[in-house]
Length: 294
Image (tube, rainbow, N blue to C red; front, side, top):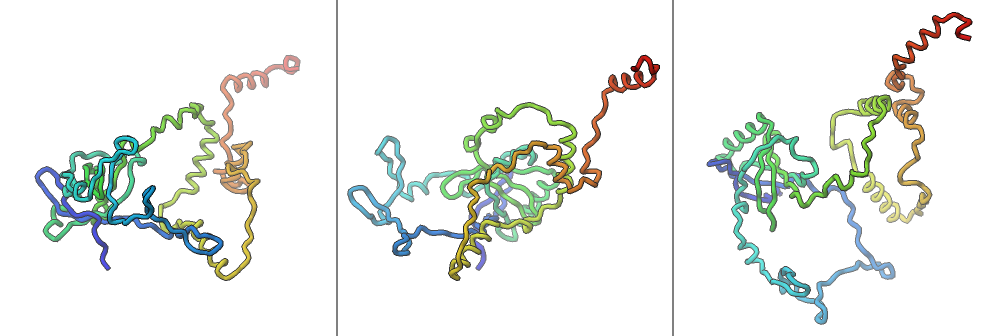
């Protein structure tokens, strides 16, 4: 069965309108759904929508409301909510273009695939896609979906384009409040060289298929073993420090990380340079007569 578009509308750039369809680019993955069970009977816990003093109610009689004072609500039905007019409900107007590196990664939220809605839209779609690629820019605009308006970005991706929703400024915590206690101390050059060498050693091309959810795999294995009636032994690691061991000698730890034995040149820390003043003093001492050095 063909995927259904998440949104249909048009991308507008000045006087050019391009009919497009948007599809979710991600899926939930291999998560294991666990339910709440009443242990004495083995039955699943269920929840009912209730009203105090009335009890369970018919879901068809439930509407939405905004609490403007404690216990006081403005009631809104679905038709009234849908009637809120936003031009961005059917049109994504690209109002600004920026270099992609200008937007911090923390603002990007969820990706969507963008494709032309029909053959007639393809020519303009391809022109916009290639223009974005050639200029290394992303387009920004606002789009209404599923009851709210998003800031979104558009960029080329293969034969199509990617749209990503962005978080608003008030949805992101300021980093300074978390990082202010970190000192301004500069790292030792030798330690920094070793750390950089370790990073270079482990650098490679990204392939999402190289990673999988090990927790889900272990949980599935646990479920299968319990289905077969096998005895489960739980390791008690309460005494383990979740922060790991205390690194007393960072230099030694970095060298060990680069390879046992430290045979490679990368594993050896650069030699400390002797300050010029000390070198001069050493040479003078060597040239002095024996009775003066004694």
